[in-house]
Length: 252
Length: 277
Picture 1 (cartoon, chains in turn red, purple):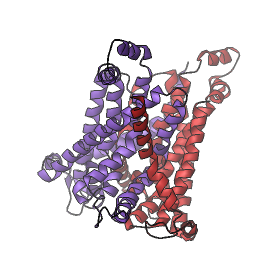
Picture 2 (cartoon, chains in turn yellow, red; picture 1 turned 30 degrees about the vertical axis):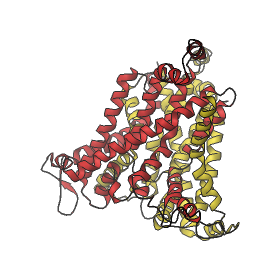
Picture 3 (cartoon, each protein chain N blue to C red; picture 1 turned 30 degrees about the horizontal axis):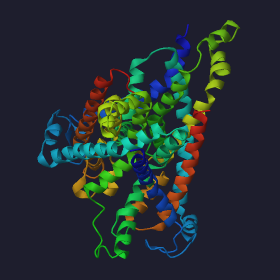
Picture 4 (cartoon, rainbow over the protein chains, first blue to last red; picture 1 turned 120 degrees about the vertical axis):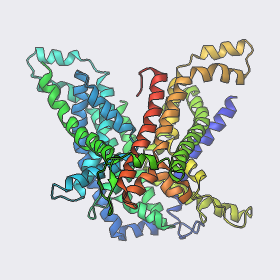
């Protein structure tokens, strides 16, 4: 049994990893078609010439950076508050946001923005995308940071306050430093989620805020193009590195 | 004493979740009861017509297909995920490494992972090219743009959601129980189905729900891997909001999708008695 089990497990792991591995290998293919014709960097060179792609990547980086800062700050404070006291309505809303299908979150935000635009003179753009990303990633930060807080000793803060610290002083100088690994891990997760999101972004982005996933989606829709393999390989390696770093931080 | 801190720590997320998550959902709920205008938009009279239209065979088929594809994908995830989780829970030293191997592809771009299957499955894709060069087939097989391609994409996408809860319960099973079963003459299959599976039931249920929910609401996978005939609820919603511009109907479809997700969660909550996430 154990040998059959090991073989099955190996096959399932291969199923999980082969598609991306093959995709990466063929990003170095000299041919435009799915026949190996020798090693080449030409698709990567082509990426550097693609201004739409570069602009998309730049937009994605800006959006992900902004969303990471806001979502991590709001989510960390929220987790701290929830650690102190229960807030069933907020907790319920956060969990609801985790299970709501992305497409539903996306269209409801679109409907909300359109509703606002009747009264306010603003348009879809980077800011609407950033707000959307902050909203859908706050719950992830709360879950990660709260998990860490629950392993911590609540009496440390009381000790700090007995010794004269204010409430905020105890938070910033005692609890927050101990939380930092979890905060950093959740920041990396938010960056990943934001950088990768297509479904919600495509609904709330304006003409000047096309993101990298939107460019890739358009390229993939158009058909065979090894440049998509090349940018995909770069994303897989880049985000993979991020996630391994986050895992390290979460489990010291 | 904690009230001031509590207020200010929770205020940003309350504002954010209230204004940008709850309020938009309420707007969609309201729109679902309005009537579509001649040029798009939505206005009174208030009506349940959009929900009634979902019962039209054309749309009911889409909702039914979503349930069927999600159920099939969940079953396949269980079939693939169980042996993997069992193997990881039995491995002595490399548990963390294997778990990271399971999670790593999950965190690397869903879009890219879906594109990888387009690359493998299309007419000029790797699988067809290999089969053709081996002389096994003459014409490329129509692997992409059908329900099966969607199921493969979903299983690939959400398998980690199955493996993690399964692993968590399987790891807690006392190995002595398995030894005792063997000593008492149980064959491997007996041990598996009469001891391991019943003890792993909480993990099986949690894993199934965790896979079923995102599969039900899938949009990108059926959009890229499925054809026109394998549309799911998520595509219906998107289509009504962008192309058809029938927001009341799209809103009704959104809320119906949410209701299906909630039912699946409620079932899980009843089985697990509280300990949800």
